[in-house]
Length: 228
Image (cartoon, rainbow, N blue to C red):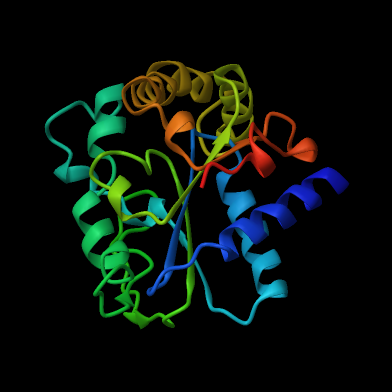
């Protein structure tokens, strides 16, 4: 895991090099099972070891729209997954805008549990002026959100690997491995292919990471993979 540790260290340096007169808002973007959450958690620990600045960790899955409010498309369809799952207005107004230019730095880390069945009562917090916000999740460079990030990191794996990892992971809470595989083939992967085709997040991110082999996490292209 030496290469992964080295890459995480370089990534932390790039994050800390971003200068803003407000908290730095970092998107850890990527498809399902790409390793976004693990990477963001590890990066947070590296940052906390290297700086006294406040590091805020948020998972975008805590900003899902309640299932009952997703009425335009079938919930299990690719369009429903891509276009209606997340509450972009809440993400902007309760998290990203308050931490951005002219914001009051009063934010919340989530509104719903990840199943989108239960509302959360998380208190409003106040970020330090020089805080670093690390947000992991899918579709973070959608047009509704893209302008509000100060740094975009895309964690890249193949769709074959999405299917393999996702099936192995989600069978634990689904009826069977077959059911998990079916959901990836019919919902998650088609929805994520829509995003990749329409938004081209790999090309737009300032930092592109190859996480096909987690132990060999590496930058793709450029000096340290950065396109800042």
